[in-house]
Amino acid sequence: MPSDQSEAVQTKLMTPAEALDLAVQSINSGNPARADKICRSILKVAPDNPQVLLLRAMAETEQWRLKAAEKTVRRVLELEPDSAEARTQLERIGQRVTEARNRPYTQEYLENRAVHMDYPRFIGIETVGRCNATCGFCPHSDLDRKYTEMTDDLFEKIVRDLQEIPPHVPMRITPNVVNEPFMDKKLFARMRRINEALPNTKITIFTNFNVLPKNFPDRIREVRNLAQINVSFNAANEEEYRQIMGIDFERTVGHLKRLMTANRDIPFLVHPVVLSRVKDHTRRDKAYKEECRDVFRDFEEGADYVLHVKNRINWLGATADKQSPISHALPCGAWLDINILCNGVVPLCCVDSKAEYGIGDVTKNSVLEIYNGQEFKSLRTTETSREATHPCGSCALLQ
Image 1 (cartoon, rainbow, N blue to C red):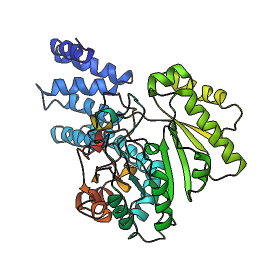
Image 2 (cartoon, helix red, strand yellow):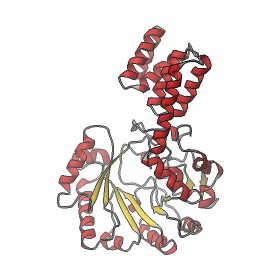
Image 3 (cartoon, rainbow, N blue to C red):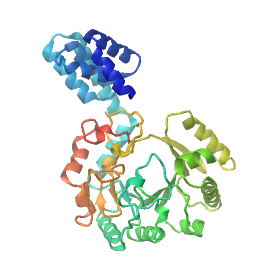
Image 4 (cartoon, helix red, strand yellow):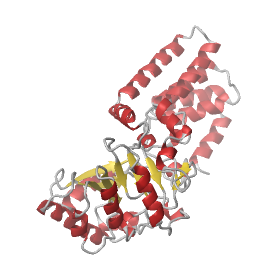
């Protein structure tokens, strides 16, 4: 029997007092999620128990579910208006709300929101559905569109739509969403078209960097406003790399070394190459950085490349991964972005891989009409916390 089911059965066999003691122990030992589960179990049979409600509010606060915690405390105060403990907890929640508001991530979001309320910050354009890797943390293998290619007419329409954005508004295009951009044989022609039609727009490429066209260094130099190449590298040793990515390690390393050498000779990248890893929350996360430094010992960290170990997400439930913990009192930067799949459908965000929460279709409406649709714009207008927004409240993306 899975451990969570076993614990649920164990809790049912306890007296309310025993279950409450276990919840208190869970809070004190730094396991608020467990305490929250136990409290919910007790509240099913005793929904108006102030002590249990208050304990649940503490658990919610520790999980940064601050709106839920406030609602729970106010229920306690309805039952016990003179509860000093409840009022103290309410103050604690208020302090955390202020703390979340003052975090650099939130402040950066608010600054960007002021600029990008009506015009997107990042535009992801998935020009093909294909990917050559088999990463277990990615839902690509389950996508219906993985063999689909965006038509030239659709790509051209998207570019024309984006020309409606005033030139002074900073904008960045990524020619991919849930795919490998270099699987698109037309990628360089499409980036050239972006340069021609949107001369002020920066381009960022997210790639596994394993499959590249011939004469890549010469062709990549021709791309103007290339701000960054972010490589999903994930492991800096052959065995782990093959296990995670399912592609050839030495080929990718060779491509990276040639890229960094070419950029040293005649710089064309605004920022160093990013070598990213999706966390697995083991010692391998730390070892990754040391191994990267060894593999690329002939290059300078901070100048030729930077290392980034990023949050693991479950793609809104599309994978079974355990997500990295974050404060759900934070907003989501993806509310300032728009992503267009190779079939023209616009998902809620870059991790809505199957567009289950889709917000539009560029074959039917313009990019800006979709970006400024009532429900999507209301996120930017009214929300500074993802907690009460579905499905954002269950996501660990920090975009």
